Length: 209
Image (cartoon, rainbow, N blue to C red; front, top):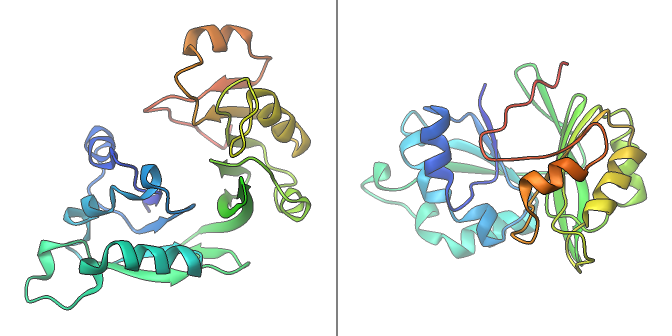
């Protein structure tokens, strides 16, 4: 089972690097360009059939508005990605033996989603976690969480805020993502407390450890 969260602008490069030759589902956190605009690169991966795409009703409407050609009838269906939009609600999506729970977050004032899979959570592009969502994240052991920079930002967690949020949910390992150019990776790695790590392209996490 191969599940993708977001299709970034370099999704094709990532898919080739990781040897991905099929995608069983895509979950979108939100529709900002750096999380969505690799959607055309689902074309080759959808030749077996339409790929289910899960997101909020608002996000699905935005995707259909921004990429109308994907949803229009065409005599050449292989010339574009084939996807089946499915609206998320508060319930988990169960795919085979994988349960994927949408977790409401705030990206500034924009409502977005993170996702919890078992004891793992992926929470990118967030500046606030609602109290009800902390309840959904209780017991998470490994979290990948937004940490843009050290200084406050209106739409992203700082490093300190991300660590505090990870500690609050009880995570044993915290991986910082969406790190901006103002932070040097090696310097940050040396400064971070135990069990907190900067994420990087190609990182593989065994959530069962």
